[in-house]
Image (cartoon, rainbow, N blue to C red; front, side, top):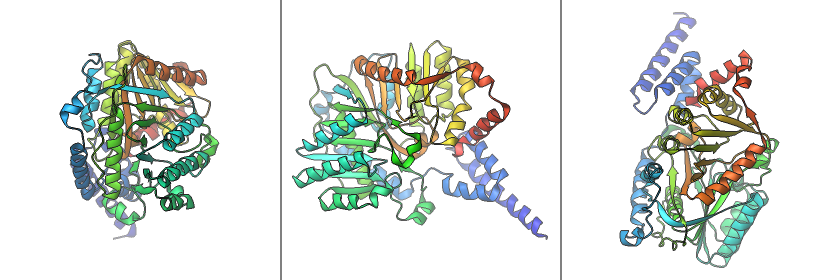
Length: 479
């Protein structure tokens, strides 16, 4: 047999073997299967390697077993039902009850009343308020960030933790092994340890071969959580980094949003941090303290934590449920928009039934792949009646969703397949007209710095651009 014949036979065997593996998987959607078939057929050897490394979303058997144990420990750390019941929210507007019920099903966290939130003005205020809260801490501080840079913001947070630890406050800090790799290797990380800050690395990269064989190296902890004394927590899109974002400075400023919460919902973010800490260290934290007292006149809210060890498709189903509950308006901002069919059709359906759907994306994206894939959906969205704006004031990194001026979802989740399937994410769903109004005002500020994309603009795109967008979107499920 000639060399060409051997290669052809090997090509055929590789394609058949991986095709059978893909067909045996019940967790893949038909578009994802088709995308992998395209990759395997066009580049069988390289495609097979890519599938081996990135094709299956798994954290490994040991991690799943550990997650089950963690969930049991977290559940047992909750308050007894009689104490917790007094915080339960039973008077949600029935229109939005399905969304809150679905969100509660993800981690088992119920909607609790009596919460308050402050919208931070910008990155400087966010940094200063977090540092001030840490400097006032009496018992403990828990901090977790996907990206923690050794810049002004990152150093300020680290120094505040060191000061707190040195005066006897229990401080735990965790950073993602990939997103914060520079900090983890820096002198500052070691200084934090020497000062008494307890440190952990989420999804470390110290054993890449083992990770490749048992899991995926691109599974990341994308969460941004700070909890102080179990009384105050922060939630939003901002990493522990300056808006100038030195690692990708040419896209700066990175435009983020962050809210400071108080009330019973803080205990849920505390439990989410505890689950990540136990996953990274094996250390079982003390049972969660009682939820903070409900604030008079506060609103109902709950935490949702998504990840590869949680129920699959929970993020897109939550977004779709929220779109389905909308009566008048949906306004969404996200830097990365590569939706699956669940989200795309829910957006289109909302627009078709008369809901004012407004989408805000960055005009210039740090990911050329995401930028191309996102624009492949523009024509369908515009024809359904959605309005699309592209932000020109930097990289719009804020992940915001407001519904009817009543309900908001804020946190770390993007509307892309990475957030849906690969990343550990955290969000807070809240029902409050005043907080939603403030977030809506911020969204209006994004729109004021944006250019609107019309259907006529998309129709005029040259053929090569449309082909490029659609070709990238075709393999979107494998990206």
